[in-house]
Image (cartoon, rainbow, N blue to C red):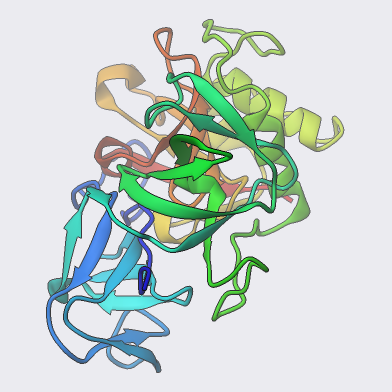
Length: 308
């Protein structure tokens, strides 16, 4: 009867100083299957943390983050940590994954013909809708809504136990602050708009211009970021985030890819949208998109800044 647990995607990498780039584990998006009986779900990543539940061989979970030997997971609508050595991951699966609730802070969620933001929109799901999940494809859930079969981004689906949105841990994705959530909400309004170097919106953006515009709008004009991702990294006041595992929606996410940095401390800035996803003005080919944190993002992660 349904799925015993659920996976979402992301992984950990530590912060290195300045323009240094960290190595990281592989990119995960998929279903985690427990490989042995008695695997403990713990409150933290380590055997010294309290046991929240016990999983047996064949049970499944949604892996949210790779913490280097431990996975942060959603197991039976309860968030915790499992030893990675006893969990096998599959990126794409066709199976009954139970129920999920649309969690968008108010806006409608696009149901697309294929997994990906470049696919046609077939329908729109209202915030709070509870749907049956029938598959998972690299971070996108497959489902049927009003007779239409399609895919929705896993960033906006919360696994639940019933049509009332009940969770065992009573946890739903949340920003660290109201400002952080407003930043994400503003950013999502502009998905699909073009990338233009030097543009600061509202009709086109480059990466730092996108961060500038979204923060300005979300803060009512009280926070004005510098121009350029490196200037934003050095000049923006706020809490410095030391690892991807500590991210909260609305955090500014900085990388330094040596191929594009020109010797500067950063090469790109994005906005963390929650559940392992970034929203950003990517490049001239894709414009403003939402995508899971990739292996390259983790490898070149400089750090993040939390505003407010």
